[in-house]
Image (cartoon, rainbow, N blue to C red; front, top):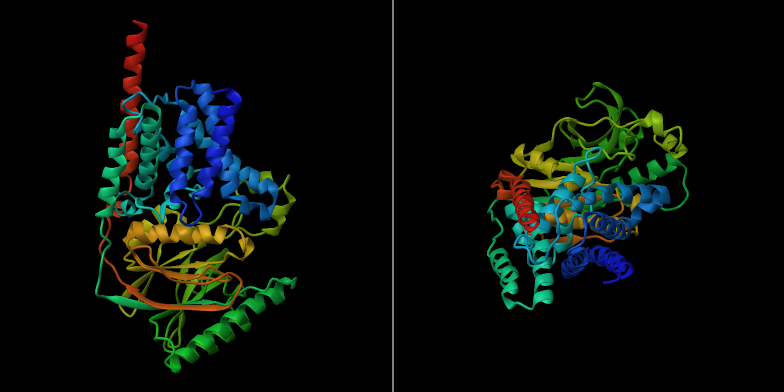
Length: 492
């Protein structure tokens, strides 16, 4: 293959892989990775690096194009950072005639994704190949090995496709058939215990309001939609929920300080015995009344009996969104950071609320993408999880759909049902097997209610969250050792 054609192929492979994240395109991830492996087969380390960088740039540039609403510099910067781990493709030779070809590339990509999901600044676990597989046959394996196992399986199947097309050996097709059969026999958990949840999507005005009017309008929208929900409950049109959930930024007027937000929410909650989980920005501390050094992105449990009670402050803050890393240095060159004058203060504990003896975990927005944070929430006792999110900045881009897909994956991986409450969409209810029970459109006022299972049993991926990473390290070590032996034998 001519050099230019090889680069065109990997660029196309990245675009096809990005396309696989759209609904029912799971197979495109296998095709995209197969094209990439075909192009890097038998190439030198230097050539593998450049080909991998082109592939990753193409993939991520398409996948996170929604970041460009913040500026093309933000888009380019994010794509560049997420591409860097792909330099590790220089470590191992890619040789389709090697017995390690089935598993060494898979192990490499698993480790690349693990690195990208954890660093820098906590990582960016977006665009992990496993998230493209929600409508495919391999996603049940998430229960056993999480995102790493599903990503690894996609790459293994892609490698067998390359071997089959290059060497025409039908036995290569046995590997994906065995994997498919194994995945088909992974059963979701079941429980007789249930909980009924409701989410309020008040909507966000898209007109050019001043900030104070915008905040008040969003608050009023969520109060009004909650009143509509309570009227439906009283009339018997909607089953009475155990918990009502507002989204992240349901009120950006601090409800823990005297003012319009506290007054409206207190009046609202006084009309019902149902607790309401309020998504709010507050300057109070992690304990009510404690003075904080900065704003907190919080979920506050509010009841008619006790008013504001337990508070969960978002643990995993978004770099460059909720805080500015290297602020003193970067602010000299990027004036846009003046729009974030105060860094948010992270919480230190996972959020689990006791709702009449039922344990409800809470994660806020991008936290749903971090497997370790979900593990902490489940370890704290969560039997079902709510996601409070605000996607209005990225409305009508691919971001809300991508985040909803990640939430579905987390449901399967952890065998927990999820309720998503978004200010402007997408809100929804997801069963523990990933089935979407309800889903709203974007930029509309809407309500979501439904009954889901409460599950206390934990999955293998929760009990052994890093086993796929350890297995990948062993595979790479064996492949590297085997390559050194072959190289020594060749030169002897």
